[in-house]
Length: 282
Image (cartoon, rainbow, N blue to C red; front, side, top):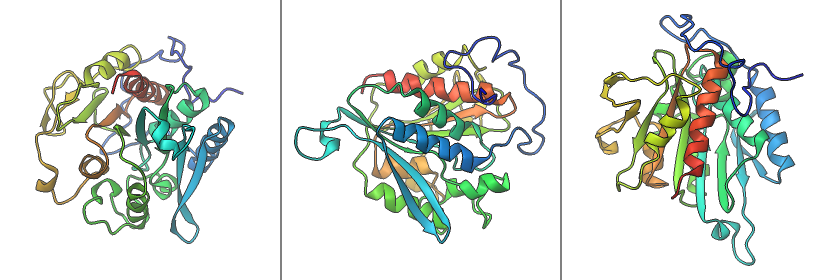
């Protein structure tokens, strides 16, 4: 039986029959939930079916984070040297944002990745948060504010894993915003490389409304794009994206689906944005 939470590869009006806000989110997220362990099992099955490598990142007794790696085989030397580009994708750092892990599952199941692209994917950085249906982990910590001086075991384990990986050409962090009027994204691009932002928004627009507000989350925005001017070291509580832009990449996007819309719409938005970035030149 088809999963009702996963949109078709090419969303149709049957899937996206209602692009209006649901009005469920009042002072927080009150939309659909997912069984995260089942979703992660399906991510592993899809990845292994296409010869990816799966890894459990130990966090604490009985708790681990899942990491998946698509390696590109080289005639000699390490596999990462054969890849023309290296891309990192994360999702599920907040337990009330189910579209991210579902988008990762769909991308893995469809297996439409560019050639000669090595990928590292963490489908869910906060599995306990999903079991509790809340943003934070079991200790009440917002894991996306832990990446400068981490105390949460999930973040410490994730950082240690990231430090073992090679530099990435592009990083994509999949999120949702319960207050948003539509899809939007953050771009961190300190070297002013060619931007994927406008193309991502263009590709999302047929499947999900765009937030065209002039101010989003207190920051100037234009056509669903926020380009923060703050230096990472000016903020005492780092999101994952700040760690990535400081230590692992020079081009990072945080993708925000609007979680007061139907879940298939949000999944379609994140999938479309990721595909647009994957298909862009680096």
